Image (cartoon, rainbow, N blue to C red; front, top):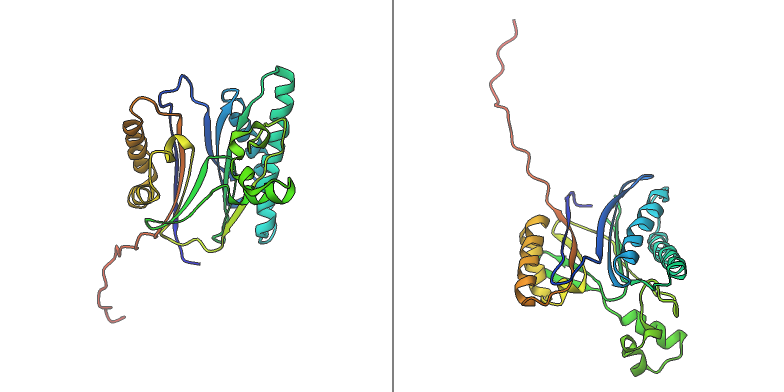
Length: 268
């Protein structure tokens, strides 16, 4: 595994909305040294209640995670599914009590000490994987559409138009349907890799090439400032909540010599 340094950060902007319904956070595991979890959620219905619950549940589940020796990708994927399932159940119970239904999207990314990246997502928030500035992966609904066709016996065209039906909306908190979590894996993270988790208030205004260029050339803090400013400019006063988490893997700095070599004197 190539040595690297991890740089990460999160950023938000309220856009033109009356309140911020997105949430994002970076966690380290209390019982999983060297593991990192990035989480992002977009509150789509019911304000920020659902997205706030994502962070609470993700931290609790991750703090209880005991990886043991080299946990499999399948186990890490199941951990992300567990966060989705538990959050979904709590949101539904809270909605039953308050009589207010709440929905949210979900993106989660686990980085392991041995250089693996495992992610899961539900809904229209996205995860991007860049190698330097090139986008090599962007999450989409392909797996969910296949799931609808296979399990619900829906015609392909009906499944492709699932967002037009509340019954088929893939979100946490939907009282009519369980969320479907798509899981992906990248086996060997190296310096030059970067990941961007973001809500539609950001990705809606950029091409993959633009996001890759900014993410690769700047620190997470500088990149997030540049992207938020440009998203606000392009939204022209009609922007949604804008939220992101950026995780970059950069080369370790070269050690500079802080000593001089002198000829040894003859011992007396």
